[in-house]
Image (tube, rainbow, N blue to C red):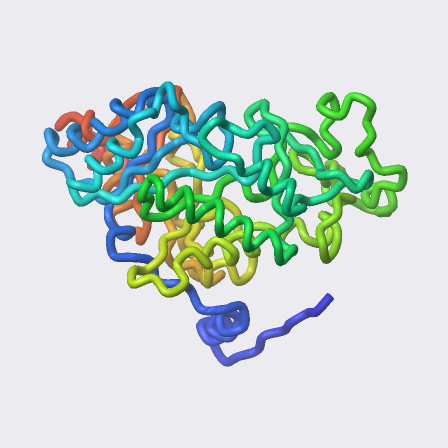
Length: 368
């Protein structure tokens, strides 16, 4: 393990030294600095396509429209539902005609059941690109109820396979960027993921975690993730867990090699050096004053870490009750952030275009 110590006359100079070491931040395309919209619960592609019209009616601008997992075939990464989003290519073309960019969410796990619209798992299994368990087979995790395997981002063959899969997906639907999500290697299971492995064949006999004398916080290291004994080409999950988002983003950026446009890649997770390959945000927050305040702190911290293009889910992502006055104040604050995107869970179907004049006036009284 290498350790670095930075000394300088001022805090600014210390930060500059750190950023020079880990890599200077990427510059996103101009449209990314505009307003974005992400909404879960849009079950049909034709309804998703109509979101921009709501902004037009309210005389509001919209620069990017994000596609939630609603577009996928049973939540499988790199797939599109033929039933609900069967006209997705034309939906995206219509949005593009309005000058709006399209960014889909991509989960880290590759479903073990290939969807009709993609064969990512079959090709990945054939290329031997997945993280292995102690039984030498692909480690099994779970996301959204699906059994999944995870790409081994330290394997050279994985980079080739990943680029091929994403390029085919990007070309077919003409996406303008990607949002890499759950790339802290999230799993619905803790560790070896029983009951998917009914006999527990992937449970290691000598778990790395059981050999650690002290675990900070007393919480399992594999909570909602794959087992820490899982094997990459160059190490174990215990050693490489934090590097996954960085290496995944690095492999994804290969899509734009030689491109004439600036790349756009959002990553939910990050580590030192992430800013050279992707941008980040404070996602999955709540509809509270505290979350709005926290987003300001997060923005400043991200700048120190070398990820200046940062922001939060404006108005809060989760929660059933929307305080319109709070949202109005949050919108104003977000206008000064590099990344500004409205995002909402399925619990509340409401957007900036639903704001009333009264709520805008109330915000100036309550949240100044």
